[in-house]
Length: 402
Figure 1 (tube, one colour):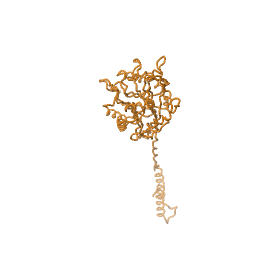
Figure 2: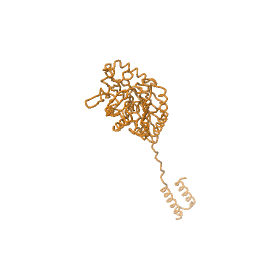
Figure 3: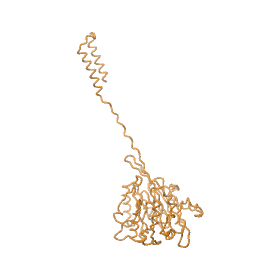
Figure 4: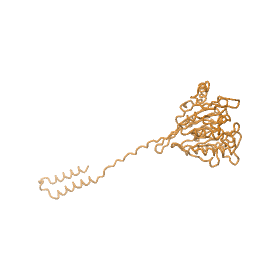
């Protein structure tokens, strides 16, 4: 019963009790009772607090962060390439890579493998079998915007420990460049360095199967990430990084030279790396391309990107892969989701003019879609031939659009 109903009932009772008497004869006490009841009712209504309806907490809105990654293969700088790049003041390699630089320019991260070490200009350049690449090659790649460089290769000890020291000093002077695979200290080798691009964190590693029979100094085994006998260390490094950052990228120097098929070790290691937390596996070393595939539905693996540039003579040695992808991070409240999206790949061709059995000139790297028959006769059929190899394990990955 509400207060107004209560008052009505009380008034009615008073009226009944005083029936038979004229209204004018109501006692003053009765009037006082009625007045008190009305005042009390008014006071109760005034003191009753308003009911507060809580405002619903709005659902958190997702925030999206994106970064793009470009990848290509080995920089195998034979003597013909640096001879073809000589100037009056040194070397200029920029024209060799201007087309690939243009393609890569729209990407946030740009990766390639420095197969032949930049071991110190004071030693003079050298070619096969123990390479030393002029620092001006690195300058050209830096000017082209490449900022992820793997240095753990079978040629990384071609100039000894001092060559690695020179290499790392060189790259340390290039602002924004991240290298992995060779180190000056044990602390550097063991550190899990978390980098950031566009709000996305990542770790970058590089490991090689070996160094052509050479070894790091016995008191400095940490100088080269060689996974032979250290496989678990490599997997543990990846697993630790997976807990610390959004994306783990690893460059693997593996496989069988000049084979366009994935060997058992590559197949098994790729799955172990995926299970450990690797998101992107970039393979090199065979000097030819090998297939690409998704592993466990989450790890994209390029088994071998081929020679991005070289003066090797076989048709298969002059074809390379270039690839792109997007890293997408979505944050909704405390929930973080990271995906690799829009993976696509295409092919490159290194063209040159052979002037002798061991010398070439006019070396230049082209995307296949820029080739003509004047540059490479029958290029369309050659393109189809190597695309079939690239897609032989997984044809779900897009071709073109890199």
